[in-house]
Image 1 (cartoon, rainbow, N blue to C red):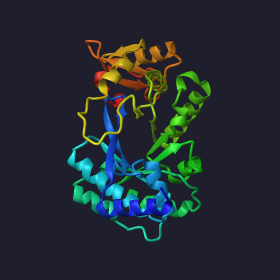
Image 2: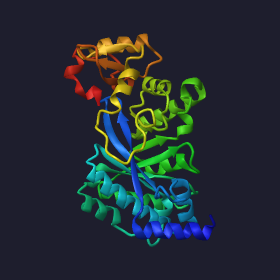
Image 3: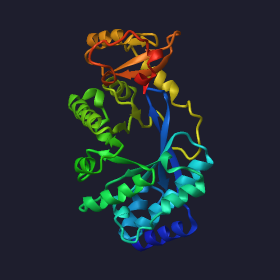
Image 4: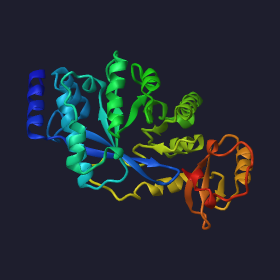
Length: 322
């Protein structure tokens, strides 16, 4: 298919609003619940532009990327609302669109009003596929979104042209580790070191880390041990067009939580937890089970005080589960 034919197909997709929105869940491990959904866009199934790489590449080449992204956000907001999906909506936005001089101001807020969604439920996920030069202008644009109540996520940390500088400059609420560092992490000590460093920086910058691209139970178990709380990937749920009941990922979580890891009861004291972490130095999080031994959450190591301060149980200290 020639470039001219692809541009013609793109024009037809935009003219007829033929964008399809899929949603992939982001799971909160400590609370064993759906934290949010990332909206992913596709062209018509019978079109050569069905695949997102082809769709966005030709839009960028034809100077219609901003128009395409606006159509994707409209579809995502509408479908997310219609399906009454849980948690936050993660919307992909490229710096190119944000820095576009003719970018339609207030468009996303208007789309949310039409869908009945507050900005507090929406995360602007910054996707970087080309170099970003004007950091100050980009920062101003994202502060504008924050002022309206949106949160910011940085996608594919470690893979972009300037992702570490973007993290430093923009101070996003969420950072998503590139799937390269998640793939086979249970077999690669260097990848574990990289993710561990990201977790340390995230704690200092008060950002939440999301590990994406998880496909194996072994990868999930390693990430849980390291204290990663937000996870995404085919193991937990594939992108789908229709809403799914909130508990669909919980069987996978139950298997991961019960795979031979040490546990503590809900009535465990802080002193007991500190002793358990001393005994299991390799763990950055401890599984919590109820009276029947069923997994009900995780306690990260960093949530505990350095010394025993009380003998209060976990049931009386719910803040440790957050």
